[in-house]
Length: 232
Image (tube, rainbow, N blue to C red; front, side, top):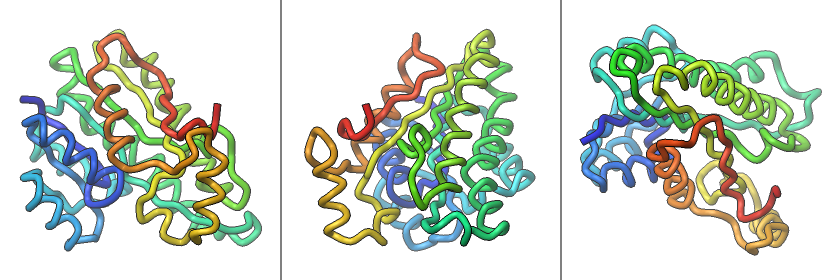
C-alpha cells in the first residue's frame, strides 16, 4: 500500500485522481483550500483523508506533510486560472497565480523530499497545461505559470533522478471540469472540433495518465500531453 498525497483533490482532475488511487487501495491524503462541501463529498465517497491547506502557504504545507509522514507518490494538481487581456492583469492577480501554480508545487515537493530521499525512492507528478507548451491568448499569466511547471519538472528530474526519485508532468488540454465553467457551449464545441479526436477530455482520463507516470519506473522528466491531439 503506497502513501499518496494529491493537491487540489476536492474537484476536477484532483478529485478524479484521488478516486483512482484509492480504488487501488492506496493510503491517500488530499489537500484543498476552501471548498469544504466538495472535500467532504470526495472523502465520503473514497475514504481519502482531506487536509484543508493552501499550497501557497509554505509553513502550512510543511506542517501538513509532517502529519502525513513519508510519501511514495506526490501528485500536484492544485491550480487556479485567469482569463483576460494582459494589460488588465493586476500584480496581485499575477502573484496569486504564481503562488498557487508554481510556488505551490515547490512547497509540496520540498515537504515531500526528506522522506523520499531517506528511502531512495519516490515519484512526483505535476500538472501543467497545453497552454504551458504553446501559450494562450488572453491567458498570459496562466500560460506563464504552466510553462514554469514544465521547466521545474524537467530540472527536478535531472536533480533527483540520481536519488531514485522520478519527476514527470501531465499536460491536459480542454478537460470538462469546473475550470471550464466560464466557457460557452459554442466555445467548448469549437475547441472539441479543433482536436483530432473530436471531443474534449474528462478528468478521469487525466487521472489515468497521472497513474501511469506515477508507476512508470523508467520514465522521468517527461511531459505527457492529454489533449485529444489538440497540440501535436
